[in-house]
Picture 1 (spheres, one colour):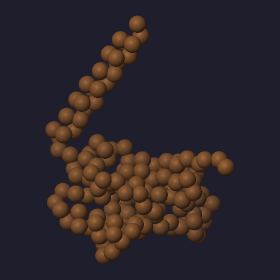
Picture 2: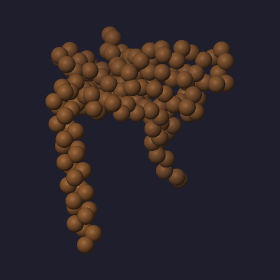
Picture 3: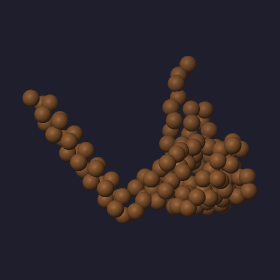
Picture 4: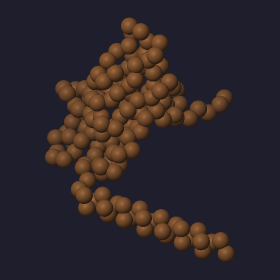
Length: 156
């Protein structure tokens, strides 16, 4: 039997620049049929998205899933809030963590898993300060220079 791989739909590239990711969780998303078909065709936009815990449920806000071209009357609002599927213990854990100052739930990656179900990877994150961003950029540059020097040295 062939091994399927996970296919990324949309990635929040600015999240790792703007936030320090402390923990990640993979959860399901409640979608309609036309939304899933649209995700297979074109994808979505998750850069300005965020998650909120309301009661005993986690909701995803700010995700734009393009309307399905052949959807007709079955298309729903592309910017509606969507429920996330997590275990009860994970929701209570996240709720207790989010009560701390400075922590947020940020969507990192929207993907199809190995069974072709839509999954969302969310991260428990703390916002970075400007000097943290500069330090990360300096560390990336120095690592790149070291790798370049090692590559030059191994050529001979």
